[in-house]
Image (cartoon, rainbow over all chains, first blue to last red; front, side, top):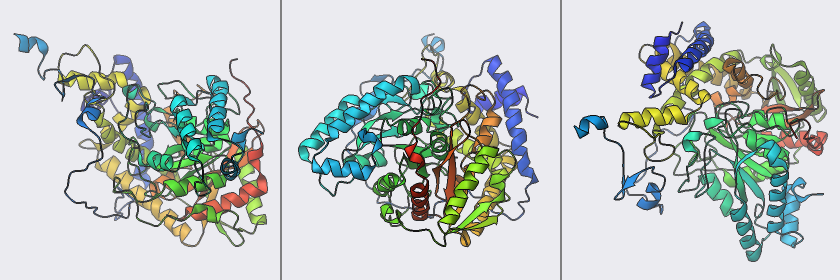
Length: 101
Length: 489
């Protein structure tokens, strides 16, 4: 049984903030979905190895040299919401009010 | 007859002979989009000016017989990045995203001369089976405008079925090419995992995702897949296996083809009319010389729970990159850096994406990892072994693509669990990494298309093309046109 607390905890881990309505809805829905996933416990998997990828490639190496694909710094900054002097600008890490004090 | 209803080879010959120009095809494509898209909403972005310019350049250069794909209009699902052309993945969080490079598939097909007509609508981040979770409003099904086109590649499927473009690319993580292909009465193939580079595909579940092709005619997909498949240094999971010319399989006879029909694909929850159509399809294959064998894939029913654990876990990790810093939507009115992450994500993601992120984060969180993620990964092994066992002495596994035909818009959008079970017949192929396609198999009593699914051994797309083409030649369902009935006029 998934509780509202669980939902709020998981939302916090995922860097999501949910409204009270969303918490209510997700608690019911995630509980249903996770009950469905509990069906997996019916499967006998003793000695079965997990599959986490299905590629045949094992280790893929390349030369440790810079890649020149023609993409410039300006290109990469073109989608950044806020820049300053060719750098990505973000708000201060601590609250604005505290830094100003 | 309008040009976009012809097959690729016919168009190619006419282009080479100079009977038509690439610019004519683009104009016809744009006219059809202008006429149909207000009711379909298959496109998020139409690349009108650039497409025309590219076609004119191509016409000036001339099209030789070797350039099989040159001048052919194609559309790309909006999770495939296109340089300087808006790419949203159907999400608000990328609603302003202009990629600075092309996905490998776009680069290859552009080099082959295909003309990019634009970006198609999809469920947000490819999470869904109805294209209703798109931030840009649902796509409507051309066979009945009140119904969904399936998903998540619903825009691509509707665009092809409606004749807006000859081909469209989609991506398939748990059925997202095949189910909408079935719902729209077209052919769609999810190749073997590793067959096509995922470079430039916005990641959802990286061990499941694969880019594929959707067209009305089987051979047209064979041409396009041959051109876009192959190893790519930029995708270390892409395979070095040689890529055959898939068109060589078209027209081969299927006498002696060993077909496995799983009982589980005709069990509870599968619509009677769908069963009847697919059984008719199997009879057609038998008449053509295929040998049918009934088999069991006992872990099929566990595919849905295992898939939703694993794909959501991979998604929760892949979608961490959307934080409002380097690209995409950034929330305003924030007090600190943490706030940028949380508010940008909470305002930028829609409900289905949040649900999957939450589900995945839960399955990977301390105390639950073994019971959910690890357990599901073990069940994946069993599903994969099921397929290997059956495919060891059969050439194809065949059954319905989807348990039903297209449903009405808005009817199950609020019931995620019910929506998740729409993928029950398609998920296993992604779990096992095997190639799988949906081929049109007629219509139900309401005139809605039914799809038949063909699953082959890894890297044996050739057998799928062979059987699908033989089936298409015998049934010619592509001749039936969508009605565009229903909807609000």
